[in-house]
Length: 452
Image 1 (cartoon, helix red, strand yellow):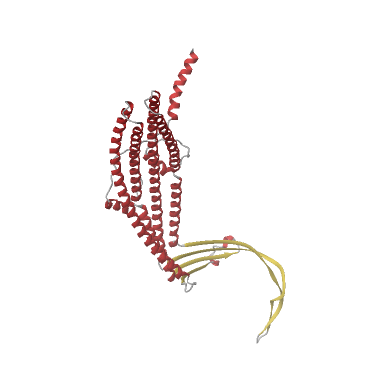
Image 2 (cartoon, helix red, strand yellow):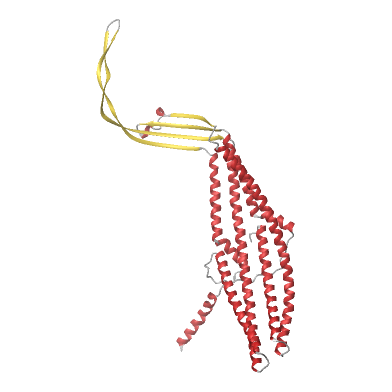
């Protein structure tokens, strides 16, 4: 008896934990966006590319810094020593003849003589003037850094849009599946009722067959919606960087009234915060600086350099003053001909600048068109949603009325099937209009550069 009580207590303690642990937490749209911004693989790659671009831009600062080189070497070298003999030379003066010994080469070589040799050198060179190359390189590096940030912002905007798109697509499909489930229940009820009436002679065989078709059609719709829902779940999990088979549970979207801005307001927002426009503007600036850098090759460059050198037979003597040599100089470089490479490079930079201009103009015009079309689409969908709700209210009343009429035998099964189909279409129409409006709103947010 005691053992049974202990097992019962243990079961009651464990069961709530298992129940809670087995539940899938419902994710809101904000939850999905936050998770995607933190874990989305495509966005993570974009972040790494941003860091790489910034690092490359920062390396351009080396162009204004001096170049310092230090060299220290030591070697052990040997050479054959020429053989010499001692001869006697004389000098005749007015007083007397003086004899003295002298060294003379024999033309032969003796043993090899080995010796240590150490050297130290230090040189510093500084660019003074290069036709504006270093200045424009630094400006281009600054623009490149900003461009990397803007490009990453554009990736964030695209990621948020993909999340919204997948979120609303999943919820819309789930809502349609609920409608199809209700259709199946209604069709099954109609079929059961037709069978009962057929048994008592109040309905024809055709009525039972038509209602059976309605049941099977509803089942087929559920099968297709389950397939679509599974695909939507995999797509959302991919964006959220989760395993593709992770169960998806989403909180229903808040259906606040969608505010549709005017075109002027929307375009003003896009100009101020759209990463796409800022990205092309930075590309245009960068092409200008690259053109100036290319033109600097026509101008001579001037640099300064100083150097220190020393060598000795022992390491301790390479800093001795006796062996020190110092140097200082001015360097002037001017390329007079390089096979027209400078000319071709300048031409290519001119073309790149014009291309950046045209690309910016085209994208701005395209963005204006997209914003205008999306605003018009949102207005149409908003009106469609309003009309769809009116149709749904009327179809619901008609559906309830025809069910009662069929129950008492004052309506045919064909009337029931037609009005039921109208009611189903009305419910699906409201759902499609709702989620289509939210998807259009998400598209507008992307054009305006919103990151939430």
